Amino acid sequence: MLLEHDSNLNKTFCEKIKDMLNASLTFKQNNTIYTPRVVGDLVQEQITQFINTTSYKLTETKITKRSMADVEFFDDEDNRLIVDIKTHCLDTEFNMPNLCSTKRLYETYKTSTNFFTLLFVSYKLNENDQPHFETIWFLPIEKLDWDCLCIGALGNGQIQIKNSNNIVFNYNQSREEWLAGLKKHIQSFLEKEEKKILKLKKYFDI
Image (cartoon, rainbow, N blue to C red):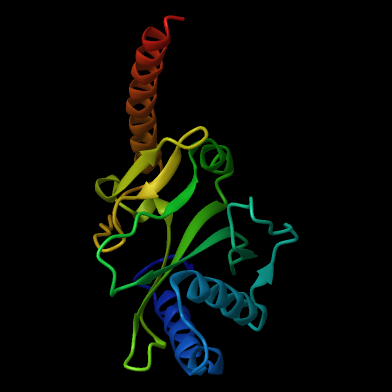
């Protein structure tokens, strides 16, 4: 299965993406200022084009700004991979990216063949201020330990990485164990939100 982190298939997939990005002329233009947003947009475009050249079949889901995924495709076992592409500049000290809504993820995971998958691309800027891609990993969210995740107060609660420089993997964690952790964190999040609402009601005397 493509999502098995220690499989040759996964390693080859990640290596091909890294090689493709580092060889791309898109990232060798001297007149481009490679801000994190610019790199992120270009990486997403390049990876989507790359997946189009593989044997994997894209889903028919229309990708919009509100979509969970940057690209979706079926792997060779017909699992639906909902891929969120995250770029991380290793020259920065702190990044806290949003991943997805707690409610949308929980709804998506009611189907056992759906996997919300992170394609994480790390890079550094070279002496010409152009990105050089260092590390690529491709894993479902349930292989991230809750020690490096949190729930942010956005909408129904947003799953976030606490700091992209300190990601903790738990390869032995099952999907069910990870979802149990999600429920515990949502409970804690909602209790804090309830206290916040009560304080605001008291402040405004309502």
